[in-house]
Length: 172
Image 1 (cartoon, rainbow, N blue to C red):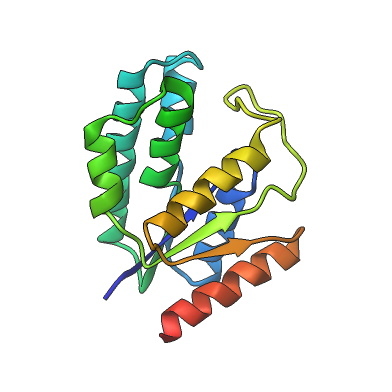
Image 2: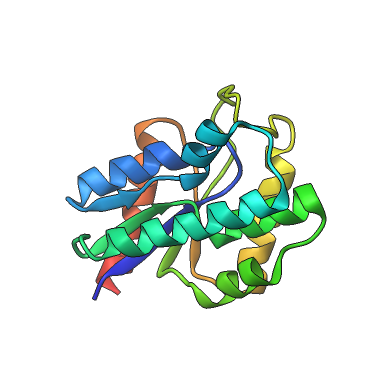
C-alpha cells in the first residue's frame, strides 16, 4: 500500500528541496507545489477563488502521481498549507478546502521548522511571520491528532532528520 508523506510548513523552510531529495532517496516520485506553477502563469496577485483552483490542481496532480509512485509519495504541500493560507490572508477557509483537509490525510506530515535562511522570491509573502505561521501549523496538526514530526537542521542534517522520520513510518 502506498504511503503518502506531506512536506508542510511556512514559506521558505525547504519543503521543495526536501520533497525532491526524499523522492530521489526512496526511488519514487514527488508532487511539486502547484501554487508556484499557477501563480507564475497568472501573476502573483490572487483572490480566494484562485486559492481554491490551486488546491484542486494540487489534489489532481497528487492523485495522478500516486498511480505511478513506488511505496511512498512525497507531497510538496497539502491542504493544511491551503487552509492556513486562506485563514491568514482571507480570514476564513472555504468549506471545500476545510472538508478536504479533514478527509484527505497523510501517513506522515513533515513540518519544516523555519531555522533556515529566508530566500527571497517574488511569489513569497511572509518573510517576517514564519515563526508565527509555524505555530499555527503545529497547533492545527496537534488539534487534529495528525501524525507529524518537526524537521530541523541545516543542509544534510535536515535531510537526514527527515529520512529518519520516513524510515520509522515505513517500518511501522
